[in-house]
Image (cartoon, rainbow, N blue to C red):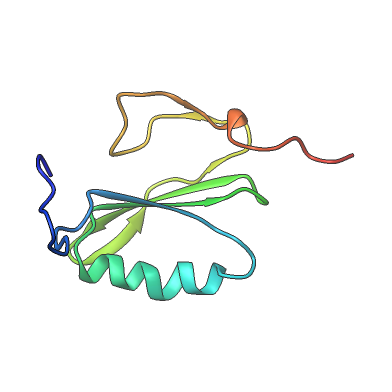
Amino acid sequence: MPVPPRGAAIELAPDWVCEALSPSTVQLDRKRKVLAYAREKVPFIWLVDAEAQTLEPYELEGGRYFIHEVWVAEDRCRVAPFQAIELNLSQWWLPKEP
């Protein structure tokens, strides 16, 4: 969106959404929010679970989300829509307690 509208609600869906999952909202995030994003035609969503150290990227195809790969722990990855940048997932997580 080159220029946000003044004084009006934004009705344009984002190109990408990243949800940081938490135990208290995981069911809401995985079901109702994902269905709402599909309804609004958000092309890419990422579900990030810091506890499980996972990145689940989904892409909207034909009105439904599909996952092509799950990235974990210390993986390095290129993930749509930011595939031009290599992500080092080890930098995303807090150290695990012994």
